[in-house]
Length: 216
Image 1 (cartoon, rainbow, N blue to C red):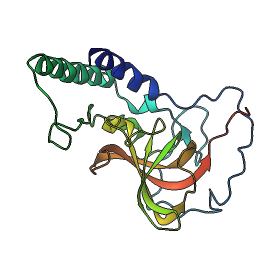
Image 2 (image 1 turned 45 degrees about the horizontal axis):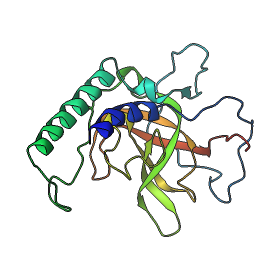
Image 3 (image 1 turned 90 degrees about the horizontal axis):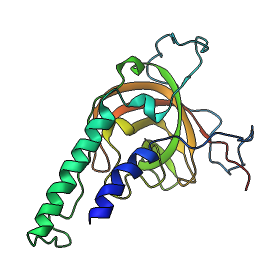
Image 4 (image 1 turned 90 degrees about the vertical axis):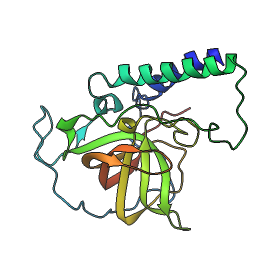
């Protein structure tokens, strides 16, 4: 138990980095029907971008680190360390966990602290899709967007400020959830709760496209 406790915080923090972008080709591999020609326009207009090098109307490129305000990583590590120290102590006292019991779950560590300067900004960020509401035809009106593959499928999920609730009212067709994508849209902050993983950000989708992968 102790090696897992030590390694897990490091793995989670390492996983919060976006996919590597070095030497990526200019075009993404073809994916049949993975991306629609158009996506519904956002419900509200993005605020004018005031960042150097980003023209009005262009999406601001952001990373998952940009979504973590100062002190958020330290608080994440503190919560995880405290949890696993307490769990180690209980195991040392003969504590056992029965499958299906209330203790047979992992909490979502972290906070809803956000980077307020990104609220109402048109942004573009790479990551992975975790489906929520969808149809049998593979169209999703809502899905979670996370920094690494498999997040929210296994416990614990990323912290809330490392999860984005993506909304696509017209339905976004996604045929492969195991490849990285770029999402683009207007970002908002809040507390968006669900059983899969609570999110501190929501995004009104305007564009989804495959992340350019390196050739093997």
